[in-house]
Length: 118
Image (tube, rainbow, N blue to C red; front, top):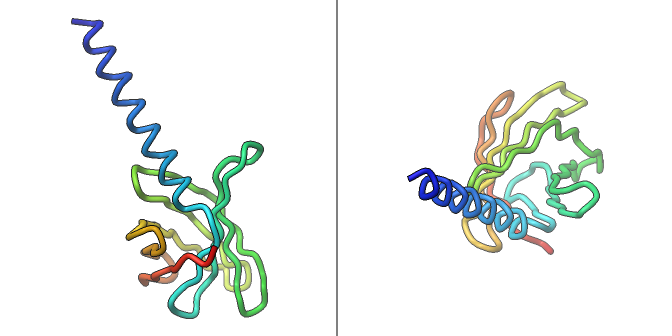
């Protein structure tokens, strides 16, 4: 019985790990918003792992992404806008390969649709 439970637990952990890797691979690239908002780049490399870079197209200023978490098929970031002091949480979900939905909460509340550029 203990062996069966252990096998099931390891199998489940493997499935969850594989799903996480897949979402990271599918999000890699440069994403442009459908409204005036920050642009987004998801990167993955061996040295720094999976990370997000947000920047303003108005002045090119990079924003501070303070945390990044991957839950199943959702990526959650917390970002600080240095100029205004605003802090937001963004939940990103792939709609399809080229479309990304972002639900923003905190000092701003909105939904943004991103399109893959590269």
